[in-house]
Image (cartoon, rainbow, N blue to C red; front, side, top):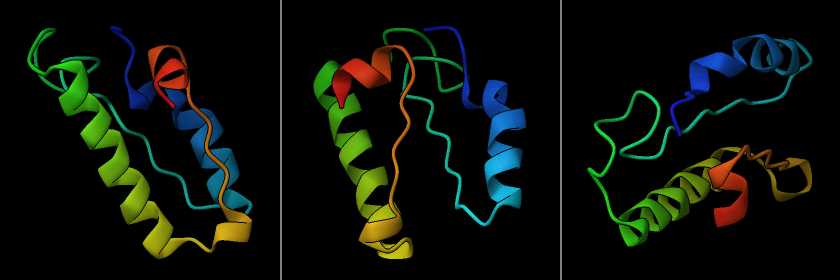
Length: 76
C-alpha cells in the first residue's frame, strides 16, 4: 500500500522499449496518490474502470495485457 508506480520504472522502460504501451496507476490513498484513507474502495474501483477505459481507447484489444501488483491484483 505504500509502493507506487515509479517502483516499476525499470520493467516499464523495458516493455516500452519493446513497443508496449505502459501505464502505472497509483490508487487514490496509496503510493504517491494522496493520503491513506483518501478514497473508498468504491472510488478506487471507479478509478480502475476509468483508466482501463482510457487504455482500451489507445491499445488494441488483442495487444492488451494487464499486470497488477499487490492490492490492485486482488481488485481486478
